Image (cartoon, rainbow, N blue to C red; front, side):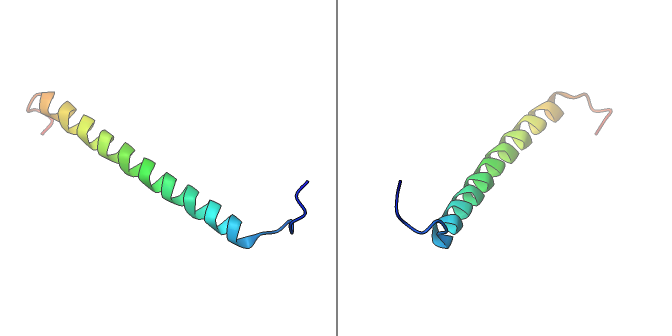
Length: 50
């Protein structure tokens, strides 16, 4: 076992920040892909929906 203090607020904050950044990046990538796919789909749709 490691004989450090059980609570390390800096480590928790760093982990939280890392997960927040990771979630933001993945959401941005997913949004970009979704916008690209939807624009391609709308180009193929006949003019009656536009």
